[in-house]
Length: 193
Length: 145
Image (cartoon, rainbow over all chains, first blue to last red; front, side):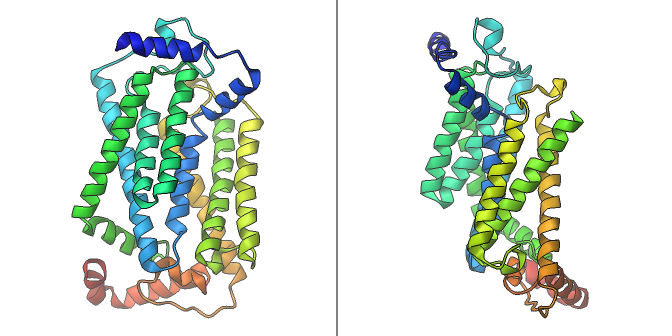
């Protein structure tokens, strides 16, 4: 597994430098500020969308679920990082970097956990958009492997944590429906939900 | 770091402003649109998002480690909340000024729906007046009913 992981990373990273334009696009795409911001803006769009009160409520529950899933997924990654530290691939293998050198643990990828948690939650409201966002999250993860800052297994593990957290939080929000309901009704008092 | 944080704040402020305009134009929340035409507001919203992202990414290198001037995950989260909140305040203020002549049309439990006709601050005032009078008898039924 370790070998396949490294081989895949080295193969992907070997394409860096072949096209200046493609590398520039990846450098932009791999940023901490593009895909995560796009996902949160989509959540903000959901919060203010909907033409009826029930439609808005359904969307706002998804927004709350996505935010809680993202926070929990990041928390699970943080706990894991305290137990197990995996050095970044560029510390062990000669790679061409397209990103700065992060100092935290490589496994699992926190960015993948957060983006997959949001995308998987949106998938439960809107299948088409959800699939597009899951693909976007997958590409984001792949770009991080290409850029030399993660092993493929870091992304797979991060994505898995994100999706599982999304499913758990969705189930929790369905069983304890009163929690999002009270929160949204309280925010309605100040006319923001 | 300060300059980076300020650039990020501006990016999120304008992008949030744009996305709220986009969402409000689609859901008919007329009183928070900056233009009367929903279509124009939608176009302006998308343009704001694209321009703010373009300016943020094309004016400097944004792949910087947090100890070299970038932002760590917590700083990003705080700044996002702060910038989108500031953007909401700006949106609601502009909308309220535009709809200052419209009578308050507050209905309990309508929330954002009251912004179809009424400016935000009028709707908020109506809600606050209602709850100031009724919270002792109504709040439990309202939240848990």
